[in-house]
Length: 119
Image (cartoon, rainbow, N blue to C red; front, side, top):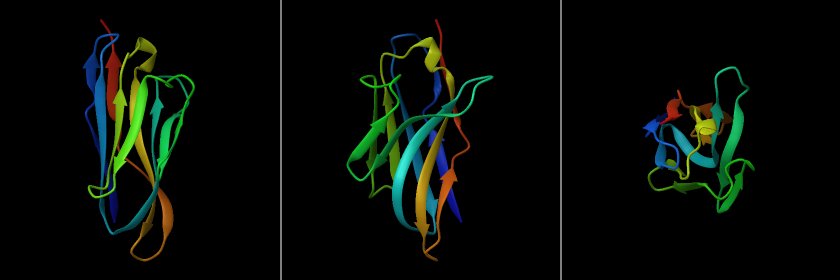
């Protein structure tokens, strides 16, 4: 079994910052790609950022404001969010492509953490 657990969401004022964490646990062999997605009310889930090794990829809407990173020793990914805007309000989901001990490769999702940007 593999689990992804997000933390760090909350309420923040426009222009503020938050740091999300995603900790993976379970029968993990290797973690390939880790990423963050978000879903606002009434909208489709969208990619925010991904990291594969040292390569990062960002949605245009967050470039220059968000930074994704990972600590492989801790099996954890982070999303540092700065200059937050009300339109960043959404449930943020962690995603990871993981090869398990039984050599199965598949995507896993966390349960989501709410980020609300409001004054």
